[in-house]
Image (cartoon, helix red, strand yellow):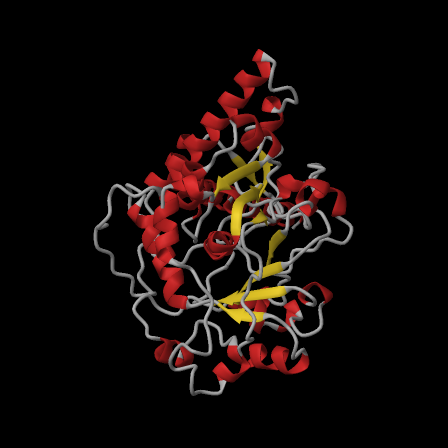
Length: 413
């Protein structure tokens, strides 16, 4: 009997070992399949990332105005970009950091860093992407091929809506539009402050605050970060998710008070304003009206969605490869809005500097390469477009993190 019991135990042990080996082989097959699926992408990128092993399933973010996330993702503190979360950047930008542009070694480091960043932007542009046309975008070849990037973006005429624009000249929403323009300034010095993680340690706060107009985005804070990002804010550009969703606290948060606001929602490429009012991506109109009722002296504007798609068309006109048929980022929209008000625009950390640390934002701890290089928005195309307008030297751009766009009478537009 004892021998029978021992034999039974041995059989059970053998069966358990067989199950474990089979499971391990199955997992190995799945893993190899996944590695094979993504190997061609990793091999071509100069920016390699290791996945966070604690996340069994990589979450796809969603700064997708047209797509509502799974409720399990809520409440999110902000819209997320669609990309896998990553933990370690194999390419170390700090190797290329330097502080003296007169030194040959610094010049060489800057040149190499610039080349690697541009290579990554161009790689992303050439990659295939999920083909969809939710926004009903249709595109024809440009008419004015010889235009500069600056002139083309000026012609896009990114603007806010007025109560004079039909149907707002007779409907209820138009009665809430402020009478003052978004910018009172003309010929101003302007700064566009990206929310990039590479602003950490930049010590650019005083430089930023010296500008007449300082533009920030969504709910990016300044309190506690003044040394690096400054304390001055004159205008915030916010997307319709930020206006609509409770977690952003549009009606009560201090960073939405005593500043001008430009809120945008893309609608569809070919929509009229009447159609947009009936079917925005996120219904920003209700909170817009509530904000204006609560703060009647506020300078809260809505961006003309048709001009957002004119900016996208300008971007596609000057990009020699096909770009995603999704709206531009808040940063590119903000740049378009600023053009009539400024004599120059400094874009801070819009193009990544050698301080690039993998962080999505300076105010949180998320590691996400899509925040720098793009995934859902045509961000890589935008940044290459902006570099074509840049008048700053390479040290200022890639070491200090400042791109300058000059808008004086010599711009030729």
